[in-house]
Amino acid sequence: MSHSRKKTPVGGVSNSLSEKDDKRVANRKLRRLTRANPENPPALREVSDVWGMSKDGKRYFDPTKPGNEKWMRK
Image 1 (cartoon, helix red, strand yellow):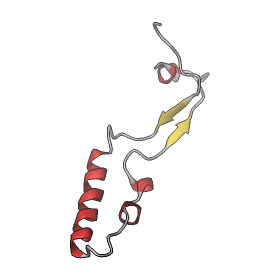
Image 2: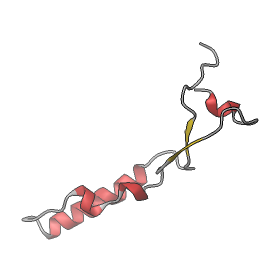
Image 3: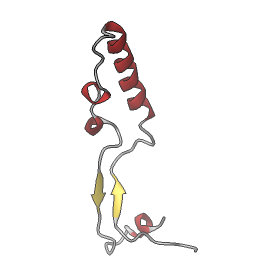
Image 4: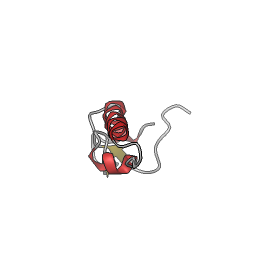
């Protein structure tokens, strides 16, 4: 299967390779708040915002446009 192609022209918008640092910060904040108030610990979603992480978002692109051929390769 050399040069297999994507069916949907969607690509990521981020320069980041992973969300590891964002997740690390969110979990540290959660642990700190849980230690401060163990009777009523917050939920992870209350502490962190998944929409604000570094790999947020995808965009559609035009596969027929010159220069976009490389983005259609898997």
